[in-house]
Length: 452
Image 1: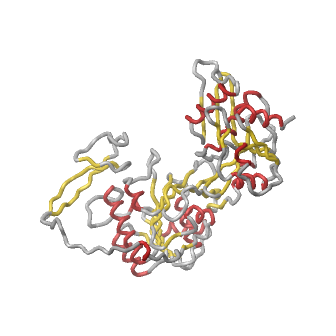
Image 2: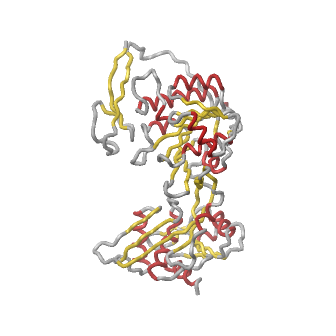
Image 3: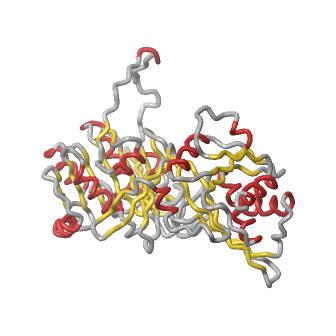
């Protein structure tokens, strides 16, 4: 016997409730609860006889993983080297950001049979896009279908190496009464495709939408089900796009891929440091070059600061691409330890190129850019500044210093200001001039002494 019951699930965080709620008590989001009908079975033995397979860890063997290259280097970098057979990848991003363009270009370059399932466009629309992107691949199959059973039958008939579903929100399982895009349909369709992928040993790439709040549409559990969650970021008014791994069971989650959008599709940016510094004016005050580690790759970019007098009671503090709370701490350190009067000034901070910085290695560059703007003194053109700033004004050591130095040297920089303790960890010699500093005062003095 079975019993049917109704529950309500928040589509943002997965919180369950026995009644509909206007506001989720877990994530404080409004109007995000979706109804789900569940069937519970009775008269099931509480102690079924199950004989599980238990192994000794030493007896387990690992086969060498085989990855399917997408043919797009930046995409493969974020994935950890390519697609793993039997895995599920979720690619999410804002509408119009270029998700379908990315997967279409990848499908055209994959060496193997690829089944492209479209639930939002017709086959004619796919053909028009393929011609615009100059896609030529005899092994690429197109299926316009939203019924899960039809998709599974097509997979059985074609035996593809990669299956791309664009998008998972349009797919529905006829065994459930819920409409496409609901919590139940998204979860059950994803689980069914993952089970089939592991059984048939193919990789499945799911394209997902992002809500207006910036969350991946569907229950949060969807992100836990798949093997990798790839976020496609960028401003539609800007030509540059950033591909970032939020979760990856088979690779590094700190890697990013950078693309530039053109009329003919996405092109890879293989040297992002040169891109971010290409429009920099070295004679402008408030401009400092720093280095950030994005996974295993060092990236040089420009930190811009603008400090102006405030004619109102509360000065503005605006940060783009940098943590606002971290900026407030650094302003307090500059005022207390370096003697800069910033309490009566507006401070605007920007990470040029649309990049977002999470590591503290850019602290010293932020402080130097602010000091440069308020003192109206430009820093020297060929100087890179790295280092973490403590509350006492001390400059703390950072990781991967040799890679940062090599990247700065490769791009023609002559000087690099870095924490003193990092000098002890250097093994290889370089031709770039290393300037070790201990505190914020000596660092700012050294940065602007280079100008004399």
